[in-house]
Image 1 (cartoon, rainbow, N blue to C red):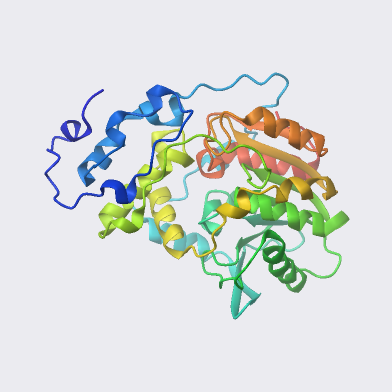
Image 2: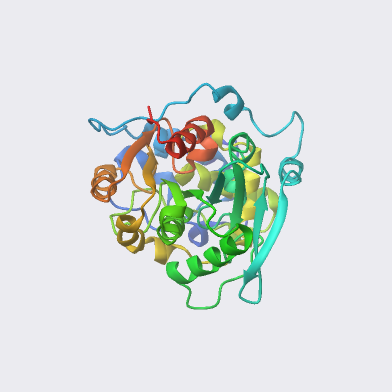
Length: 372
């Protein structure tokens, strides 16, 4: 294997401040040998991390897709061209792209402990309501590539969960149940009594979305969950994430966050574009809620049987939050009365990597249609 520092054209002493053990943890057990280059461990410098981005051997794109007989693979539909349009205009800075899209929404605030829970309502009065819940260490921006295409069919309302994004922190000792109480109190303020709604949640938002869907009873018409935790199952295998707080400059933070996107969130190099990296960087800087202990529990598995809505669970075919344990997730989802589907050529953050597939999945589940 090539030496990362040499492939960068710089010696390991190019930068005296070593990121070293402060950003790298121990190698996880169970990964394919080709996925763990020796150079990824030990003391590394910033140029090594930049060079390692070019080393595709450890990324999920080279992990094999597990054969799963009889499992539908989500396909894009007739609206794929609109869904795939990148939200950034030519030459537009990531911050400007986000601000332009956010300006199309009405900001709503509901109580959250000592502050406010922040929602963005993209309008569409008279259309079915679609609530979007984002992932851990994230914000509504996890859905940036989806909100406008989906708003052609739904009144899209995207949440910043308690302690994430622009929302205030939840009271100490929070649980999935207590976070859900804050969210559903906001729903009751925003929507007229008896209004039916659809829920789509990603990762930690898929977990909380299951609690919201169960609370909604027959008011919740469909529930789409993408790569959620909280199932009480073995976690997927991936390299440890780098600790961005160990670096000082914006350039270094962006580089570390791009590396983390490729280690965990994406399959394709092109998905970790400047907008995705900027979103990841801003999201993690604002994150206060520690979602991982909740995601490691079985809280969603216990709620799924109580969800009356049409429910479909979707995972990227190389989602490293679950790979290679997708079959266990299939069995659990189907045992709860849900459908299990695969999103092709996708990692964990499927809504950004395969927006046409995810948007089609949400639309079809809302309509009660098929998924292929």
